[in-house]
Length: 223
Image 1 (cartoon, rainbow, N blue to C red):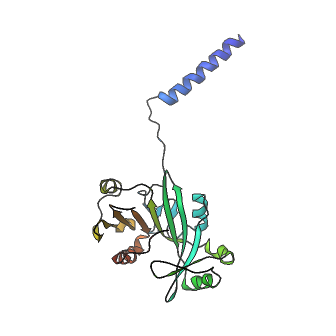
Image 2: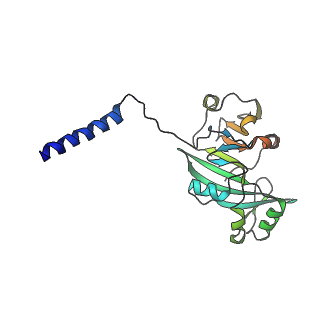
Image 3: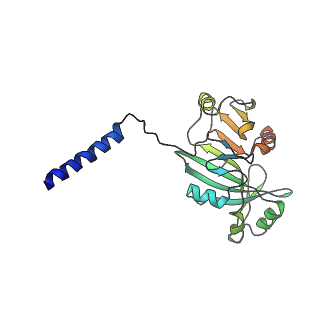
């Protein structure tokens, strides 16, 4: 009798597994952190890669990516210009990409960070890159993220961009083989390059015009 009962239990378990695997109800897997998954937030910002621009801190983003970035302060002729975190090749969602996070920092904070920063390294743009010191690190990692630069490992064809992001509000020729596509409602600018890597830049929609104005002249290449 005991063997019969165990046998019946086994058959029931097999039936349950079979129903789950082959039942009529479709089984779906939710994939997150895709570059076209840009959500508007109630505060007027955007959420992409699990980062709410202007709210999520560098520390939170680093924990989400499970990676420690290279953090530096950039100085121009007039002094500190930005603080950025470079993640290099990183798995974001299901894709690999290079990711740079620009941090929202006041001029006072940038100046204080620059005081203890490491040796300067010249950049193609004419600015100087200086690594953030351990002394300033505790302050820097708590700063909110202002913008995201995302460079996918795979090349995006124009038809893929149209399918995933929709028709841009307008376009701007960058050079003979690349152009900018603008998505102001998403706070997004995409550089489509037929001979190189695409570059996606995300900001809060309120900061979009500032980002667009930077597209007139090319910025420094990513490391």
